[in-house]
Image (cartoon, one colour):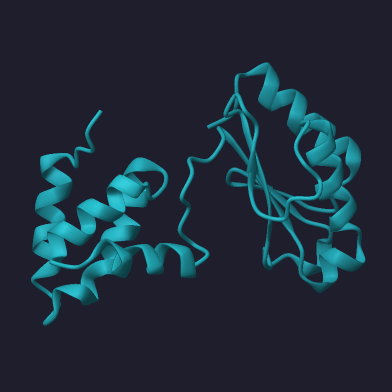
Length: 167
């Protein structure tokens, strides 16, 4: 299967590139747009971007691996973000993450985002979710769960499994 950017998106990216005196400067914007459309930045997306901007693939790959906002793998249908900054850490966010990881059968020794084999869930630690006064905080897709407990975690898992994911 070959990587195909829809003609409308490609036209938008072509127009976007005209706003940059050096094509290389458009790299980040291209990556954001491709991730928005495809859900992640694949190796093929990196190669396509490099070709489109006249760069070497390594020049684009280094951006994807450096900036934490880029995902190289698709997210699960239910995306669980557990805040790990000070207020949440002091309120027990590490144990919440561990609870999610164990409940979903993922590897507690891995530190990056983890997705279940069926693609139903992705669990990851993130920086501040801007609700320090209601720590610990978890974001499930676009919903904030304040003063999150393990019971709340269990409800998220049951809900995501019962609906085949919530995305």
